[in-house]
Length: 275
Image (cartoon, rainbow, N blue to C red; front, side, top):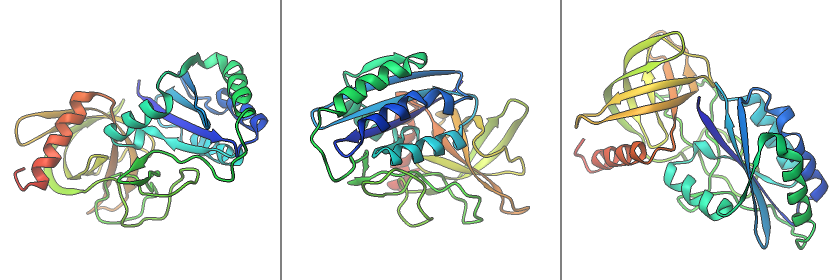
């Protein structure tokens, strides 16, 4: 079952009691989670929590509620799984390295630790910054089914705010490349052979008449020209419902180093005009 990484950060701008209430309510919001792990990290000027949520599909409505409530508590919310692996790993190491792990049924204990630490921090007038991609704070990509040109899922850039979906624009996660790659994707009920029409380090767009529901998880197997394969889970983040140009945008959901290296090498070959 896929695991979705989420995180929230607070500094002296956040009321400690509101942060504690947010953490204590996580289990009540993420009702579809099959398992939940929390990592709490305390820094000299801020504190944060990472949520590792195991769920059969992406719990979008629950995540949106968490994001809005995190903003109200004075925090910055991040959908970690959407970040390219290198940036995700760097952010985890910087923000949560050496943190304390709590089980999903220990939200109250995690809340107390955060509240006590935040109460000691000097008051700040700005929220903490989230992870950066390309020098700016990363944000979550748009997922509404707008019939734009074969969109691949990828996040945009935004500064010092809770990381929610901005309007469609030119700032996206990485460069997209037009391709025609043989691939297969599976849901619990179907197995489909199709072609991916573009790819980025965030995901790919598949022209297909078979369109799983947004936020569902599929297993992908992409055949690269050099004979290597990209195999792993992906989330349906975009659906274009058109009889001729329709399909689905898939965001890669994989923390595996081999998968990331294979993808990075292939994209580098495309950028250099080799692939």
